[in-house]
Image 1 (cartoon, rainbow, N blue to C red):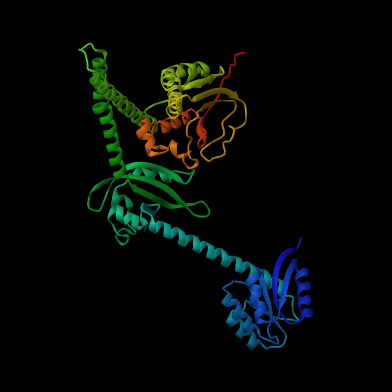
Image 2 (tube, rainbow, N blue to C red):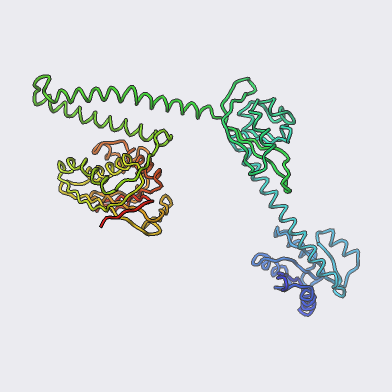
Length: 502
């Protein structure tokens, strides 16, 4: 099969053009061509189409090969430019070659045409590849220069080859100070990383670990260090790439976070529990009669303490789930029984607010952490109750599904669930959630509106905790809502063992 070749002829003779086309066809090409014979036509052809090669007669009635060559240069295109003529001497041929033409052939001797085109196409491709490589290298160099991280390359002996501005900022040495010197002597990294790298033959990434290193001033710093192999095209290892990130600030933030969690756990939750017990005791009347106003004030205090206790519990739960300190302990559980137990815990609250609970369950054995899934169901039900108007209804439905994917899981945060799965729906008749908030409400400290926090209580951690729990069960949690009509929260959990009762 002949090779396609897009040829732009700068030629005033159609007969001469056809002779060249026949030669190209004999040489294994399938030419697609256009013939132009004026500067304007050539400029338009270069602008409107893509070409592989230009074949130009030296002398045309309206312009010449040097003029055509100048038009090509002005266009900025890198195309092979081959001159064909039979009317000029070798001195003119040499001159046009010096001006930038790639080759010069006589019209009566076209045997060299096909080899010349093949050669020039190869050379043009090599030039394009070189330009692309240079552009990629320039972009990479710009990224390395702009990086906040220290990016260093060394030879196999650990001698510094390159040292970016990020390395200068992190370690205090300029590039001129470190070029050719041993990286181990300069910053005292964990030498085991480099020695391990020399034995590595697998993927390019060698190791990533936290180490203590030293700045030029002698100051010790915590650094997250990654060492990778640098290979040549033949896979021969020629050096190491070292990326270092100052981890001191991150560690400081982590310590502050740990201290904050500790304060909440020991210095806040314990006194709150004691205060809660004291108020409950006062409200029993065992310590003496209280006035109506006193009872009212104590009830307000008790309600606010309950909110604080719930907030501290949510913060501790979220931190524990995020850090892995709280583990999910799965055991076979009848989802219907778990749902009924959870519904019983919110029945009183629903009754007080005049909310009717409508529950439909299906007995399915699911491997799950009953305490944590109950926590999720409780939160979804309480949200539905709190955001419903008096006299409204809340539905909770459980069904076993055997679809390949959860219905309507189109958003990026939703994922396919292995079949079969249990689908739990909690539906309310509340005000609904705006479309732009459907995903945001699952973030940390998020509410649909700031007034929700004041009106209903809470700090916006509940749904973030719920999603974390469900994700650790390899499930998914999402919501669909229509303003003015209410919301439906969907909870999908994969089922490993199923036992459906008649």
